[in-house]
Length: 177
Ligand SMILES: CC(C)(COP(=O)(O)OP(=O)(O)OC[C@H]1O[C@@H](n2cnc3c(N)ncnc32)[C@H](O)[C@@H]1OP(=O)(O)O)[C@@H](O)C(=O)NCCC(=O)NCCS
Image (cartoon, rainbow, N blue to C red):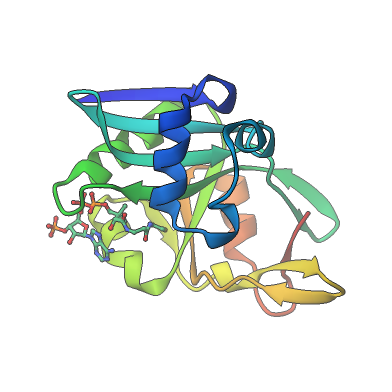
């Protein structure tokens, strides 16, 4: 099994095609490689391959900022995580590699998940801030839209920042900038 990291400009057309297919986001289906590389220029892609075949992948988004009580926090966001071949522990293997990599690089990283995915992250022994994902909000098309993710996942984050995220609530939301 091979773990690798690529920035968007180094992705092949075939890899981009596979990523878009596995994400299943309709609005992005027609992105060509050129546009994909621009759209995700502040991201890196983490892959698990077996015999040159990608079996699991994720994106780390460095274009992610939260405003909490007028303070700005830069986190990296763990997102776009998919196993192409599911239930073979490839997701767990890749996830643990990613956590170790970001921790070693001292990159503060969080992710989000819906309730149904909790068992996966619990089995992989990371800290989950249960019920805190819904307090991330965004101003879009003239209205405030709350996140539909239930939980915040702590991949690699200082205790100080974990406490700040843990204190989010209805009166103290984090604004996605
Ligand atoms: C989440 C995902 C990446 C996990 O990858 P995977 O390679 O299938 O996971 P693993 O084989 O390593 O699973 C490890 C454990 O987590 C559990 N698990 C895996 N996917 C799960 C899911 N979708 N819901 C609940 N539990 C899950 C497994 O049952 C397994 O438990 P076990 O150790 O008792 O057998 C995969 O299910 C997927 O691609 N889902 C669709 C996209 C998605 O939801 N991404 C995550 C967004 S936060």
